[in-house]
Amino acid sequence: MKRFSLLLLCLFICYIAYYDFRVGTLPAVSQAASDNTTVPVVTTSISQKKSINYFEHKVKQGDTVLSIIEKYHSMLPASIEQISKDFEELNSDVKAHSIVTGQIYRFPSYKQ
Image (cartoon, rainbow, N blue to C red; front, side):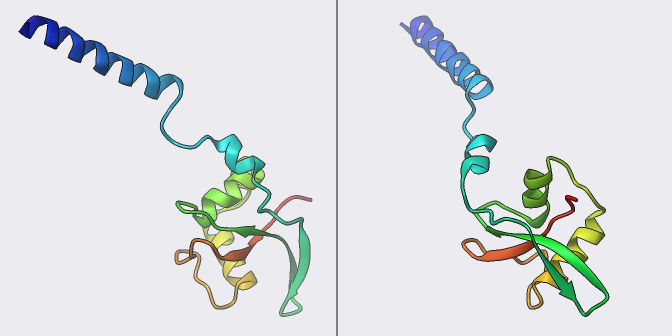
């Protein structure tokens, strides 16, 4: 009986590992991409020195400024410091590392 229980336990662990590798337990990126929380690109002028294109996005749990920019552009289009600086210019009262879930922020768009 112990051997049978051990065999069932091993099979169950193998199934769990197979399921995690094939299906996964985290939400798929395609679900986030199909969510219509991103607003089209708009241009704004910051202190009349330069204008920054931006898009608005509602932050979901686990999102960071860099992850949202990376989802939008499929890669990081600029340095981390530049992205943080542009984000903080577009959202004057918010630091890039302290965004709040459920809020809508302006994120810099580097698409031409």
